[in-house]
Image (cartoon, rainbow, N blue to C red; front, top):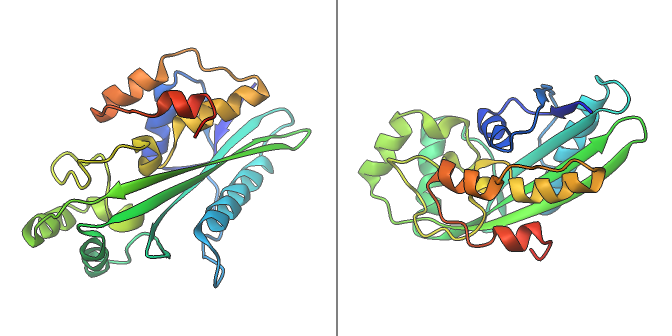
Length: 217
């Protein structure tokens, strides 16, 4: 069974590689513009499904598509990627010292019979009180300019949320334990110790992976 990740994100690729799963990339382009008044949970679910179906059109029967869409939500507002450095600074100032949410919707789509499975992960992200100088040095590095919310959770120098306790892989763009439990429903079983690999990758102690894998979260 061929597995296709409908993404060009290097972070999603790296996370999926940690599972030991054999897969290939299937780049797709879809309109990711939020519909006026659209709530973040519905928005990510819609975009992830659009990515999955766009990728499926390019595949043979029996192949499985994995698609994901991640968004940052602050005060009810969906925060996309910054348009420039000033936009990144405005967003990071708004997020500084407060807790926002990161939401990722997953879609697993099996071509042929069009079986579609969905899951969704939500992580509360408490941002630290970084200084203006730290923030501007981080922006100057270029790292936040291709990321929703204008930050990378795994950036070791900026380290924006040291007190995070939820799914860090979700904040990076692919909540793998949610994906693993979804793939099991189409008889795709990950045999590697993914929680250990994930914690080592992020240098992070995850306290919830058992609950996620067991379907409790």
